[in-house]
Amino acid sequence: MATDAFVPRRIALQVTPRGGIALFWQKYGSSYLFMAPFLAFFVVFVIAPVVTAMALSFTYFNVLESPRFIGWSNYKLLFLEDDVFVISIANTLKFAIITGPIGFLLSFMFAWLINPLKLKTPLALCFYAPSITGAVAMGVVWKIVFSGDRYGYLNNWLLGIGAIDEPYMFLAEQAAIMPVIMFVALWMSMGTGFLVFLAGLQTVPTDLYEAGKMDGIKNPLQEVWYITLPMIKPQLLFGSVMAVVAGFSVFEVATSLAGLPSPLYAGHTIVAHMYDFAFIRFEMGYATTVAVFLFALTFGLGRLLMRALSSKNEY
Amino acid sequence: MTAIAQRAIPYDDPLPRVWRAVRRASPAPSYLFLIPMAVFSMLPIVYVISTAFKPLEELLLFPPPFLVRRPTLDNFQDLLLATDALSVPFTRYLFNSVYVVVTTVLLQVLICSMCAYPLSKARVLPGRNVIFGSIVAALMFAPQVTRIPQYLVVQKLGLIDTYGALILPAIAWSYGLFMMKQFMDNSVPNELIEAARVDGATEWTIFWRIVMPNVAPAWNTLLIFGFIQMWNDSFSPLVFTRSEAMKTVSVAMIGLTNGPTAIARQGAQAAAAFLMTAPTITVFLLRQAKVIQTMAHSGIKA
Image 1: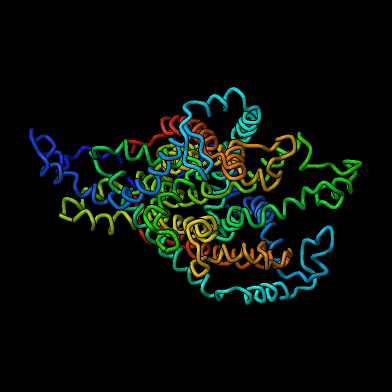
Image 2 (image 1 turned 30 degrees about the vertical axis):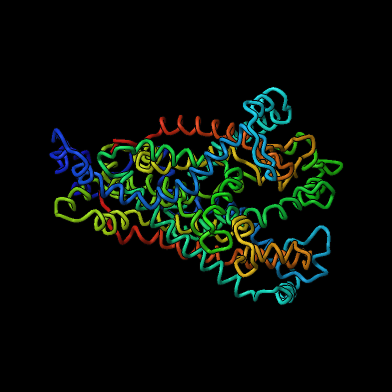
C-alpha cells in the first residue's frame, strides 16, 4: 500500500522562494477555514476557562469574594501538609494502574470477539448498557448487592454456601472498599473505548486478511498481531488515552458506592478531594490547585502514550 | 494484490487449526462465553426496568426481589400525578431536551469533523502541533473544575437562561475531534484525496463526498456518545438556566425524585430512570446498526 511515490501538485507551490500573505492563504486558507468554527468555540468555552482555573490556583477564592492572590501557598499546603491528599493519590494510582489496562484489554477483547458474530448489535448493547445508565441505576443496584447486612445479595449468597459465618461490611471495611470500587468500574468499562474499537474493526478491509494468508500468516493470533492491531492503531491510541483520563479522574463510582468522605478515606480519590474543596467547602482556589496537579499527571502520561503509539506517517 | 487471493490457503499450524476449525464450524464457543457475560452486564438495566413496574408492597420487601412478580403501572401514574403539580407542562421539558440535544449533537459532529479533516490530512499545516496539542491537553483537564470559570464566560456573554447557554459551550468537543482525527488518519486513503484533488474537486466536495462517507462508523458512534451525554446532562441546565421554561427532562426528573414536592419513592425513581434511559437505548440501537451496516455499502478496499 506504500504508494507515496507520486509527486502531488502542491509541492510545486512550496518551493516558491517568496510568498507573502496571498500565497500563504492560497496554500493553507481552506484548511484554516475548516478549522475556524471549532477553534472559535474552543478558545471561548474551553481554553479561557482552563486558563482561568489555572490562574485561580494561585489565589484564595471562595466564590463570594473576588479572588485574592496568595502565590504558591496552595501548592505548599497541598504537597507538605495535606495528608488526605496523599491518601487520595495512593487510591487513585492503585485504581488507575489496575483498572486502566484491564478495562482496555477487556474492551478490545470483547469488541474483537463479537465483531464477526451475527448478533453483534444486541451483544454490543448488553456490554455498553452499564455505561449508558451509569450514574442512575448503578448505585442503587450495587449497593443492594454489596449491602453489609445479611440481606445484601452477596452476603446472603456467601452465608448460604457457608463461605462466611457473619455478614461482611463490603462498603465499610477499609480493605474491601477499593476492590469493590474497581470491580464495579471494570463492569462499567465497556464504554467509549469498546464502541470505538468496534467501529475501528469495521474499517479494516477484509481483503487484507486474504492477503495476509498469502504472505504466510498462520493462525488467528498472528492475524490479530500483524493485521488487526496495526490497522486500528489510531483507535487503540484513542482508547488508551481515554482509559488514562478515566482512570485518573475516577470519582462518581467511588463516591456513589463508598460516600464522600468515605470511611477512613479508603475510597477517597484525587477528583473526590477536589470536589470536596470546590463544592462542599467552596475553596475554589485550593480545588483548582488539585486540578492542576491532576492535569499535569494525566497530561504527562498521555504524552508518553502518544509518543509510544503515534501513528504519524506509518501507512 | 488482491487478485491473487483466489483460494484460501489452509493454515498448517496444528494447534491453532483445531481452534480455528471449531470457530469456523460454529460461533458457538464465542456465544457460550459472551452470552453469560452479556447477561451479567445487563443485570442493572433489568433491575431498573423490573423495579419500575413493581407494586408498592414489593418495593418495601427487603431484600428487594430482583424481578417483579405482579407488574403494575402505578409508578408511572405517580410520576404523571407529580408532573401535574409542576408550573410548566411536561411536554415543555421534553421539547427543550429534544431541541437542545439534537441541535448540539448535529453541530458537534459537523464542526468536529470539519476541524479534524485538515488536522489529519493536510500535508503541511503551520500550527498543527500547537492546535492538536492543546485539544489533547484540554481532554485531560478534569471537567469538574472548569465549570465555575465556564459559568463566568457564559454570564459575560449574556447567555444565561437561553438555549445558547446549553448549546454553545458543548460544541467544541475535544473528545469528538480527537476521535474523528484518529479515524481519518487510517480509514481515509490519502491516494483517494489526491486523486480527487487532481480531478479538480474543491476541499468542501472532498470533505463531504470522500472523507465523511469513509468515516461513517466514526460519526455514527459519535452521534451515540453525544446524544447520551447531552441527554443525561443535568449540570448545564441547572447552572446555566434559571426559569422553569428553559429546563430539560433530566432536570425535571431530578426535581420529581428529590425535590420538595417529591415522591421520595424508589418506584417513581425507577420509573423516571426507565423513561430517561429508553431514548438513549433507542438511539444506540438505531445508530449502532448503522455503524455495522455502513461498511457493507461504502466499499472501501485497500
